[in-house]
Length: 252
Ligand code: PGA
Image 1: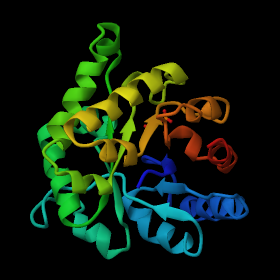
Image 2 (image 1 turned 90 degrees about the vertical axis):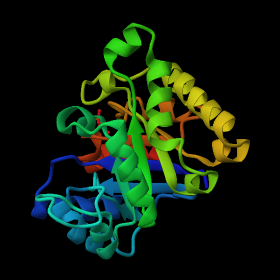
Image 3 (image 1 turned 120 degrees about the vertical axis):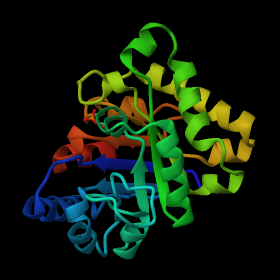
Image 4 (image 1 turned 45 degrees about the vertical axis):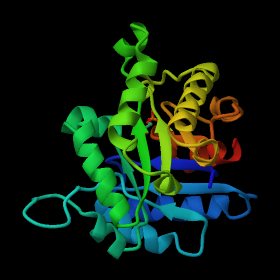
């Protein structure tokens, strides 16, 4: 079901104590907001998922993971499985973030395996993808986005899309302060929705939430969110400060 979503990707930030403080602050600041059809999500680091989940109880905050390994279990030192996430009450995982792709070598093939493992374990997926600056400069951005979706997601059946949220994140806009213009975001989101309609059905296309990510801030959130095919945002830097994160939630 298509819903509005503001998701904070905390990346490798906030220790145990800081996590408790920030969850408490967000809980307090969104308490009286009319959230209606809006989901508020935070993605702390693995070690703090349990405490964040506990502290977010009795609030609208959903706590999700930033990543997971594709195997069920076994000799994968340092990794975390889908089943482990489920076992501590985490029901959603972010996959395919550009930092995972570029810094940790996650290919479309690996992401396909992760997508399948997440769905087998009944985890919802926030799937990230987006072009590099050079792709946009050479006018290949539509082609790149299409292939990222086709390679990792288009083997799925229509029903699986009930458990998938898309997050378009042009890599050149992540952590750079440079944001795609609202028109650039809308143009790409409309393109993505059309791909879903062509590959699946109008129902799948209409029901899939498509988030924008890349330097979303209190000053630009409202304009980006006002676009027809933008259903919310995946927020990095600005999700680490309660005032900024709350302002972005209010902008939706
Ligand atoms: P940013 O990060 O908001 O700091 O640009 C977005 C993301 O990486 O999801």
